[in-house]
Image 1 (tube, one colour):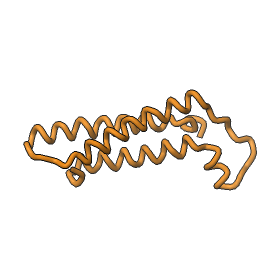
Image 2: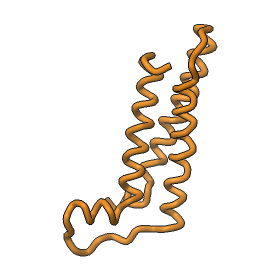
Image 3: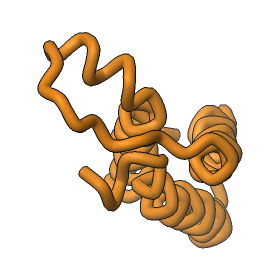
Image 4: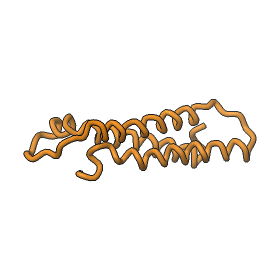
Length: 104
């Protein structure tokens, strides 16, 4: 928990988003087909959001909890961990969609 509590999980998600953008561009050049731009927009949005979250964690660090709380209170305390986990899941979804071809 100590390693990812301030949004450091977003650095890995940033790589997913960059890889999705690169792979999307390669697929467009290789197969010469038009697209709606949804995957590019989603990957670019994930790239920006995943760059902002760890910077917020650097500016506003979260203290470790020394007492046990209920789940809702823990999630409220570790907001950046929750955000970085959600953005990492969305970046992985975007990359897998571009890689397997079901997200254009």
